[in-house]
Image (cartoon, rainbow, N blue to C red):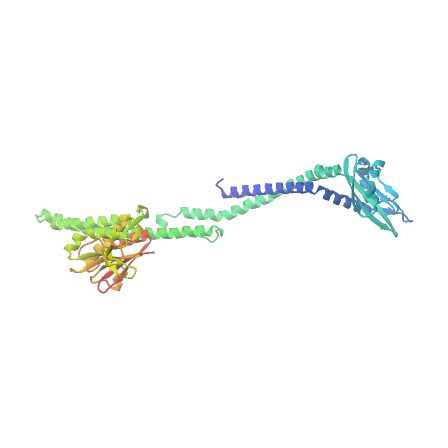
Length: 468
């Protein structure tokens, strides 16, 4: 039942059955509810039909019915207690009559004697009877044709004859509908779903060797086009990610090749009795590169993050404390500054209305605490590496943004466009880093839905993280 074709055909079958059943029930209910009204209409129509078939002689007297009406003679003979007619002149004298019993018309009472067009009712032999009078004018004279029938005859006709006949007709209609439209629906579905099978085959053929392939929407049904286009957009993102990973692996292999060559050379020098200092530096550099690569891989996976309300000032203080020794060695000062609503700043306390110092209001962001620490640490470490001795590196925190600024030489406009690229290193950097710190920061910011940008300052550079 997961088949779309099967579901549509079953729905179609159920719809046809319910439609036919509803029509039968509605017809039967309305017939029973408005039985008397329909009975009067039937009697009137029958009376009108027979009155038009009267035959008159040369003197203008009625002598019977034409040949078309003789087909009903057996009904009046067999059903003389349930069906009868008579023709009256203007004085009420019976001129023609069916073979009904004398008590039949006697029971009709004065209602049938008023000699005017319309319906009347009476009771005979315990059965409700309905009658109708039709005025027939011929040769300047008026004649009154009356037709009467019993309720049980009406029920026999409608319930025992009309209903089964209608049911058979509905059954034939439903069978025809099922066969003809069922075949049409099946063939239509088969034709409509054929492009989907082709699209499915195309999707199955896509692999890492053919990740550039895309699904065609030319013959796909309009309702399915958004799904196929969404799949193509997903393939675009996968291809970009796949290409980035390929470039990343190629660059990483190239970057690791150089320190490995250096280590080999140092080992050869050690064999000649020279010291291990240079070898240790190369191992340290290579270890740092591997750690940065692992951090970058972890930062690229959003499922690694656990988001929770995080105090931004506390996280910045933790990063500053972690890098204090490094900053002291570089003779660089670190500071955390809270930016107020009016643009004022303060380190940890703000002056109250009475002149006393009050704790500054904390800024809380929804973030992964470990990833936020790594982001702040990398930005501060990068700023320390480029800051001149005796300068200040500050972290400025506002409600919807924070920034890290150094007072170093800054970067050129050309370098500004490459600053977040993987393995890119600034010309003024003091260490031999892997060039992945800012790329890791970019990945962390994107995973949180933040934007990370670089803004030139005079002097230095400001790295700004802002809520989207």
